[in-house]
Figure 1: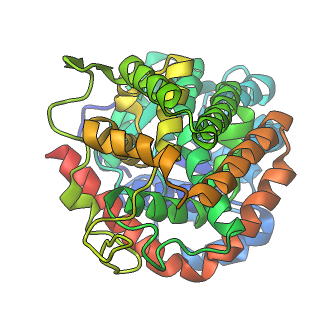
Figure 2: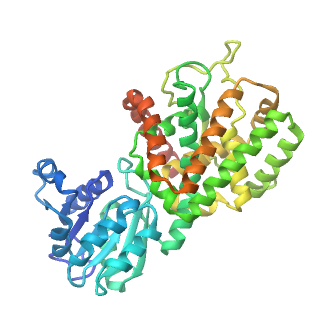
Figure 3: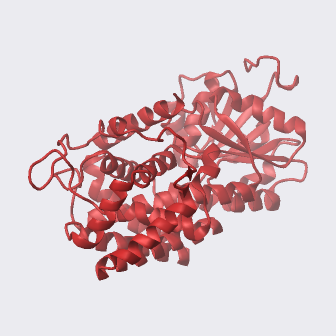
Length: 448
């Protein structure tokens, strides 16, 4: 029996929540909803049945069933928590067993295939209310955006879903499926592409970037920690968002173009053209100098970022001083160039921003709101060859990911991701710990 506060619909005393797919997010939802008093029936692939029964044996509110047919026929609200590439197949198999009059939703990061699967395979009497927690399974859900999509449903069904999900203490954001996919492309797709490309570049150079003095300091800490955070996750988490979301494909393709074109300007020594292009993009994305779109307070402060170094090495220059090595920050320059080309204003989507996006926007803003820092990056881009080989590998990587996404090749994506994941895997335990601490500190600083 759920411990509802009386403000929700009155007929939920024996309400059962079903979860099909017990990956990391499915398990997190099961635990959080169960702790709030909701009765949970859950399943994953049948070969995981005994393992899941053992894992959740001590939680009386969670009943592990053998398959999605049993979950579907016994649950009043069914959440499909499976990867986007598998949603059609899974709903086709279990959708016909949906309990009469039940509410059905999904937790995928790309809603276009999810909604199509529901419309195709669910009984007409089933209401469709989907959701998406815009963060990973290990992030505190409090105050994080939680998208709710009322697609084919009564107001009463929407109210029931809200009553169930209130225990996450997230911020409800109401969107259509199309709006969701457009905004997640703006806030996640290119962010992921940038970090995936950094990891691939470092892997190609057989380089752990925190070992030595090349990548140190606040901006570099974000690049390293969040790259490790992404590569420590399962490959399909990012593949589905990039490949199945048409808006994301355009974003990732433009990012690769921006990286390539800026790198060519650097390589050719075209400082004036590079500066004009970057400053023009800055104005279109961040506004004019006298009317900037960023808030008075930076999203990220130096003292927050400088805490989180994996190597424990103090920033130093080639002369042994206290400053980091000069870096042109091609990944950040290309991000603003990409947003400019697409007409994207990142602040318009802050209500749906993920922790990774806030960190990425924060370090990008960190570079662009300081004229001296930005000017140094542009000068270094042309006059200093220290990072030239790194930038070449980064350009190759960005183009490789864009080509993979454009072709729609899940197998190629997986292979590209997994081989780099294996390179960094021995370093994940320490990296995850530092990355989690960074996300927590940044979220706390942005709340204050």
